[in-house]
Image (cartoon, rainbow, N blue to C red; front, side, top):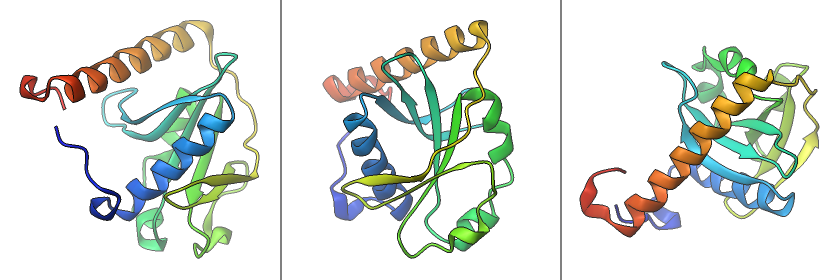
Length: 150
């Protein structure tokens, strides 16, 4: 699995990169494209220094947002839910009661903190295990691309 250059990334992937960089400054580890449950794929999941779980959905344009019919399914898989968009995105489209990050490929900032809805302990434990397994498999795929894990 060869790491793509910044120019090869899609707009949402560039935004996810900036979000992950910002999360790192907050003490979070992050993974991209994690599947918490069948039929769901989170753009970015952050695991915070106190065990908090954030889900961030990256939207590159109005059409990308309008096509997302699954976002409410992510709410039960995190303590806080955010949208991440670029500076030109029409943020008035985004639902109230969710967090908002604005960014680019290099960084992001939180403009609106998401409300907290704490995960149940059993769900948190299962999710942290999925997060760790996902991250470890990604790392192994980078170390040994011939395994076909990527």
